[in-house]
Length: 113
Length: 113
Image 1: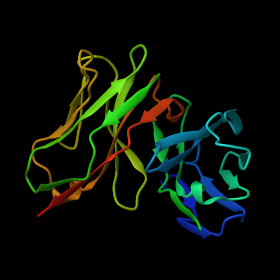
Image 2: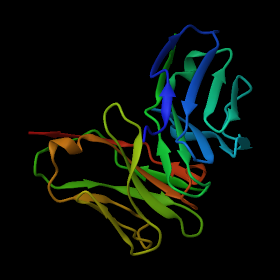
Image 3: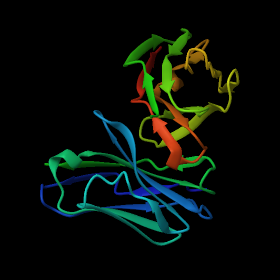
Image 4: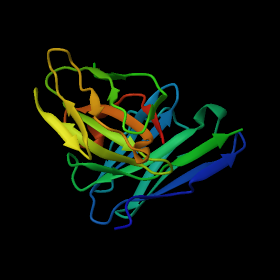
């Protein structure tokens, strides 16, 4: 089992550029979650999907952030335009059902300069 | 509201030393409590959990007891190994899914030979 796969592992970009983070959940899992981890705020849930449908995006910090899940095996988190304060580690997680154990990817470390 | 407070790190111990990482929580009702571990370069993994007061979660020699009277869920291990070096996160949830998880800020443990 490959687990949750995120790409890229590291991303360095200039302020104002568009950034796209990618996630492949575990096959058969119906729920997908995007988290952001910073020193100041710890781990925060940004958005989660159930059966490819966004259920709760109240954690998305602002309109510059958007997430999509076009099919059961792929999701993207996009930041446009990016800002230095978006620098963080972004985790994707998936679970079989909404309330079952979540499995996390290795994360994408984003640095916006 | 829901929140988790865990002891500041980093923690450095010698191999075979006793480990305690403190965690206290604030929550309405009766949450489930979790410890997650993040090994270098990897995503978060569920280490142990407890779903009701006085439950003890255990795994890989680690233990934590759900103490409602002190709203605590301290992580302990009697004899740490170098391979235990990681970041440990305390979390609470009203359900098991990642959409309900509230994480602490994490405690980095380094075990030296």
